Length: 174
Ligand SMILES: [Zn+2]
Image (cartoon, rainbow, N blue to C red; front, side, top):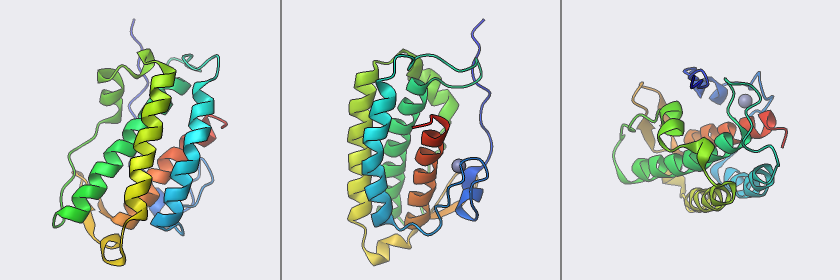
């Protein structure tokens, strides 16, 4: 039987309005420039996770392995970078839906080469951080919508993305 983790359908946008009750992080005061530095710094942490001997082992059938979480973060930085480009280049764009659990299966996260994931994560983190660093004051307040109606500015998109990364670093004890 092919057991897959239960899809996480929770709407995590609440972490933009309060401290996360699961990881204890508060991303509300972080600006895009600060988040760019944190995103760059996360590469080393995720790379060390990817070097673990048990990187392919799920703690339980319903929980992603460290490899699957790292592949998710690599894709997440890429998706958030694309959303940031839309916010900058279009008037109030609506982002295409990103089903994280479907992406994990379609892209075979669990079967990937950990060192390839480390390289991809480094690349996608670098691109996202570079885009955050180049935002000007007008661009920071531009908005876009998720397909479920949640509104983001460039600044809150950065906060949301960083929470996803730090939350999983917390889960991974990294
Ligand atoms: Zn959290």
